[in-house]
Length: 180
Image (cartoon, rainbow, N blue to C red):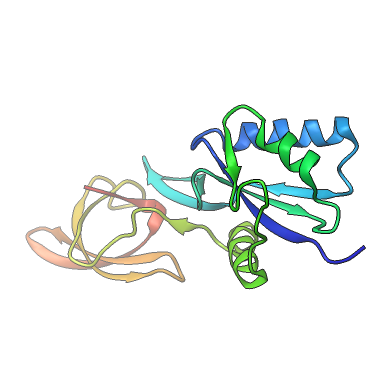
């Protein structure tokens, strides 16, 4: 079997996960799982700080698209037609003659998906220097201060808090503060 290629499938935005499951089921029923080897919803993990807690969610990198891996030699009309005729599927990039993605492009998309599963998540609303935050945990709970330094790698902030009328520098974790 020659190397598989990745194809872009346009779908109705917001229905990617449901369509992935539906198409995979259709492929299993038809016995085509050896031709279409996998279907991926390109997502990455992101987080927000809500109520002092880190909330992790998945965000779609390419809304309205699924990535379909298939054997280009055997990925033919009947299979393409079967996938394209599923409700809420718009079409393959290239229509009835799908154009495979360049390997570098596919690797970039899939790398982003794999990276976010292994490494840390991306913060949706990063903290900025000069921004006002409320401390929600620790000895300075309920104090309000201004961010003077952000360390993304260590997930820490330096915040100036007024204590008895004097500015005091405090180092806090991202989860100990929330945006004002």
